[in-house]
Length: 129
Length: 157
Figure 1 (cartoon, rainbow over the protein chains, first blue to last red):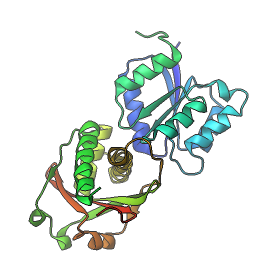
Figure 2: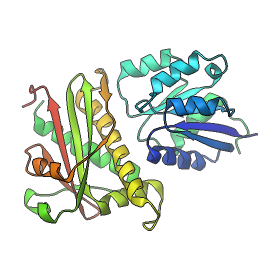
Figure 3: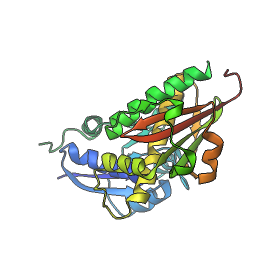
């Protein structure tokens, strides 16, 4: 078994860097599903099983907070762990995100090690080789 | 806080983000080493922010530097098709990271800021910023880079 990971960011650069970083963790990954904003993510979540979502906050059409709220109000999506990846540094904003139930917060720029740590912390050391 | 202190912190944050993300170490250059405006084939991006205070940070650089960022961050070849678009997206994201980290560096982690979406500037706008007293001139990988930081209200001297 391996992880299916969703990456949500309006920047193609960040989506690509996250994909590369996840690849460098050497964790078992079945698929990385990429979405450009919250709305795109919700559409893709309806069609694909996802183990964990990494999302940016500041995106057009539907931002990260709106995505988290929408997932929390959905009977199935609310169980999917969400990790926010952002440049946001405000303690109050990060606390607000934790109150919404996020499982982790990564500040940009991030490292592959921090991605690996947060996946293992959130999903457990499942099939890690 | 003096604007000169903000400019110093901008240089520190830009260097840290560029180093950690793209393995590039920028250096400050003297005003008389900046490129001649009429010969500088430059692109610009800007990111506005609001909240605790309002402002914007703009970043100007030539195609070569922007492609260098994309190559280093994304592990692309310089001949990659569509690298120009990827380079612009990479610089927009770089600016996003710089501004987010700069605001925390300057104001700490208590205030709340809302960052906008990075936007492309027109070639004509560089003329307004080229000689700005808020301009920071750097050189990275041998290419000139201009950063301009505007912060309101004017309690900053």
